[in-house]
Length: 229
Image (cartoon, rainbow, N blue to C red):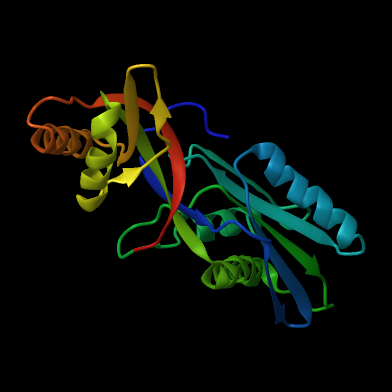
């Protein structure tokens, strides 16, 4: 999990669910690509280990992964292919995948390409194209979501006023998190995109809705999956 605060407040990743699998045959070699959503190096390495067991008779199990909202962890491995012909092209395919026009922010993704050699040498250029195409084709099939960091903010109000204010906040388009109840007050919690502009706008809106009586109290953050726009 990502514990440290990142510079990025959103990025794109695989939707939660089973691994994505895709197979290409190029000059009789089989290239089986498996993508997994991974938020740690341990998870990414588990994918490699599992596929080594499943495809134990394959010649190569090449891998690449990108982790973190800022994509700060990037690893690749050629697993016996000529240096630079497998892992790096796979990593580049992940790094350069556009999730919106001009935006490449895919992260928390590990990719493994299992190769069964078909007896025909592809050459260095052919291998680079094969491994890059294998990963790119798999990503094209993968369901994606935006992972966005939200600031959970509190609004403390008397119990009698809580229901009406919550309705007003929902009507104004705010996403509501879990409410808590104290002895004297109810604390409504709002999930707000974690940017200074969004938090300032939310604070102003809350003051407007309450006649200046209720101030917004920013709290911690949570990463939440949202559909791609």
